[in-house]
Structure formats: structure tokens, C-alpha cells
Amino acid sequence: MSLQLRKIAVLSTPPAERSRGAALITALLIAALAAVMVSGMFWRQWGAISREQTAKQATQARWILRGTVDWARLILREDARNSSVDDLSEPWAVPLAESRLSTFLAARGQSVGSLPDAWLEGHITDAQSRFNLADLAPGGRVDPNALAALQRLCATLGVSQDVAQTLANGVAAAQVASAAAPGSAASQPAPGANAGQTSTLPVQQLQDLARLSPAVAQALPALLPDVTLLPTPTPVNANTAGATVLAAVLNISADAAARLVQARKQNYFRNTGDITTALGQQAQPVVNPALVGVSSGFFDATARVRIDHFEYAERALIQRVGLITLVLRMQRVPPWLAAAPAPAS
Image 1 (spheres, rainbow, N blue to C red):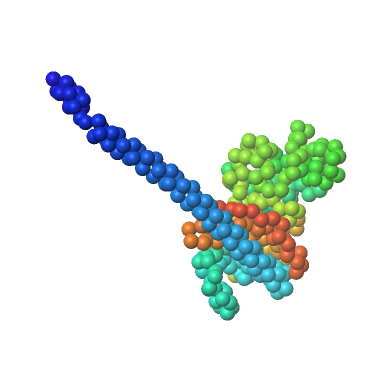
Image 2 (cartoon, rainbow, N blue to C red):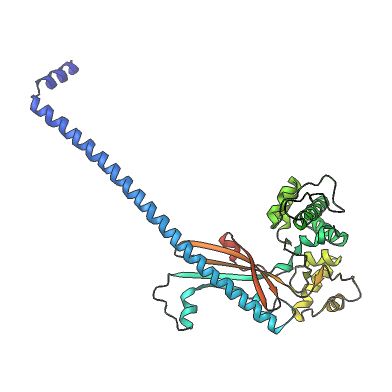
């Protein structure tokens, strides 16, 4: 009954009123559609402005970090003027806590009016404080002493010693391939490498070694704090290396390596003879100068810039030859890597 009454009410509504109702609904729909279109336009415009702002901040951050790397090069060059030995008490080893960039410029009397609100932090670490995997195969031939040191390091870190052998074979094959002329067929495994080793792709960074085998890829995160891959073979710096690395390259106990770390805090090692003296009669290792030294030629400079809520960090590998410092590569890294590292222990 009520349904019939509603139908009668609708039919009895004058045509003019029904037209006004339809026009109102149409107007509301058009207004809603216009609002959606306008909001979409504003959203796209906001996105474009945000991307432009991010790109601007990234460019500013990169230029600031280039200046930071030049600053690190200057520190390392001045350090080379003063000493031929590198240890953790030198100025290059002091990290820079997060500081407002304008503070540095104001201290030099420079204008900071147009400078963004930027914060900077970073540090320099000795790349030779870690075991250099390039030592495994200098000239493309596996070095049994370096391989034994890496096997001891793997055992300490709970990594299979087969991983050390695979790494040695892979580095050797890569060395042979890189030494061959472009386009030549010199892709045979190096002497001492497994006959089945066929990976001759360029190996420049640690992550490149992950393709050697699934076992290596799985072990790299555990090895990462204590190994590196530099362009040339280098000895471990006994003044900056941790006890785990020292125990492996010197073939001494963990306790003896810990004593070395404590001893160098009082007096840094000026030569390899100081190392044996610090160990005393309880442990007298034969120090291999190819694996252990007291100075460094490669350093990692890591810095982070924060502009408002935008963060950008890069790490540069710097090689020092005499008073010449060269930036070998720069790569973007997660911002948390710019925090000061824990002291070697």
C-alpha cells in the first residue's frame, strides 16, 4: 500500500519540480567530478614539486660530499707529511660527529645566508685494517700463506674453509682475466685454481664475489666486517686491525691478538719488530711482510649529509701514494654507515 502511495506522489509531482531535482543532482555530480579532477591536478603538481625538491637536495648533498672527500684527502696528505706509520691516534681516525655545516663556514668568515640547513657527519677508516682478498692471488697465483690466513679467519667466524678456497680460486681467475689483453682467450684458471673454476668476470668489489657460488654469497655477510677487496694486494695494518684479523694473519691465539690490541694503545707499532716484542716469549710468530705491516695506502671515507628530512651518504675509496691522494671510486651507501664505527678490538 505504501509503495503505491509513493508512486502516486511521484506521478503527482509537477514536471518543473522534477526537472529542478534532476538539475540539482547533475550539478552535484559535476561538482564532485570537478573536485576529483582538481585534487588529481594538485596531487600531480605536489608530486612534481616534491621530486624537484628531492633532486635539488640530492644535488646539493652530492656537491657537499665532494667537498668532504677533498677534505679527507687533505687530512690524509698532511698525515703522510708527518709520519710514515698509520695508527688510530692520528687525526684522520677521529670521526666527525653530526654538525651543522654553516658552523664550519661561519668559523671561516664565509656567508651562510643562502646555505640550506644542512648537517654533516662522517669518518675515515683504514681499508687495510681488514684482510684484503686480493692477497689471495697476487699475479693470478694462489698464495698458500694468504689462503691459510683466510681459512683461519673463516674458522673463527664460523664459515666453512671451503669458502676460502673458492674465494682464492675466484680471485686468481679474475686476476688472470684482467691481466689478459682485451678480446684474448686468456680465461683459463690460474695455477692452483680448480679446473672447474670458470668465473672470469671483472671482480672489483666484494659483492662481485657472490657469483662464485651460493656458499660464498651466504658467507659474505659474516665476512664483511673483517675482509675487503682492494685493487692491489696489501698487508694488514697491525696498528688498526681488530684482534680477529690479527689472530688470523699472524697465526696466533685470540688472547695473544687481544694483547696486541691493548699494547698498541700505549705505543703504536713502528715496525714489525715491535709486534713480536709486544707478544713476548709466549707467542713469537713469523711476521710475513706481505700479510702484516704498520702503514696503509688505502682508506674509506664515509660521509652523510642531512638537509631537512632528506639524507644522503656516500663512501669513497681513497688511495694514498706518497703525498698524492686519489679517489678510486665513490658509491652511495645507506646513511647509517656514516656513523662512527666501533673501536677495533
